[in-house]
Image (tube, rainbow, N blue to C red; front, side, top):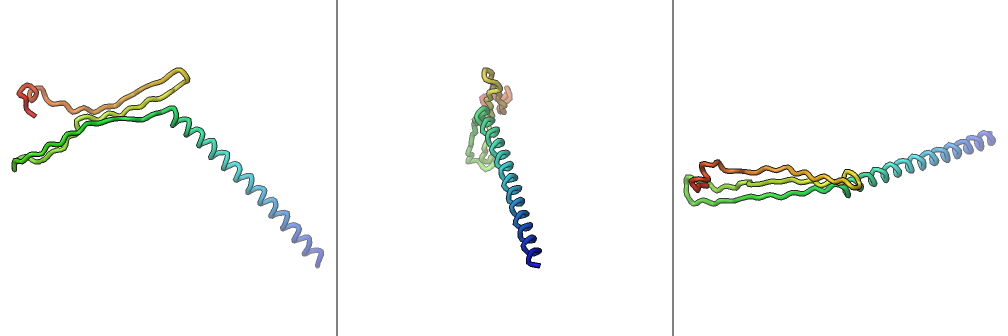
Length: 109
């Protein structure tokens, strides 16, 4: 009976060691994948730059018939990217508010 207990303890110790070894290997694999993902993300962030600008206008009216207005006049989003060591690209997407020609001729707002 004593031998059986010692054999069982030895078997449990061996199983624990194997489980710890597998856990350490899994942890190492997860850390490796995380590091690779982090490096790829940093590489992308170093190569691509986002930017933009905008223009707004606020008009306050003291007349009862007209209310105060807030107008978005211009909004531009830009990207600059290095797609290869000697190749870059720049793109912009813009929204521009324009007035009709009739208003511009009369000088109205």
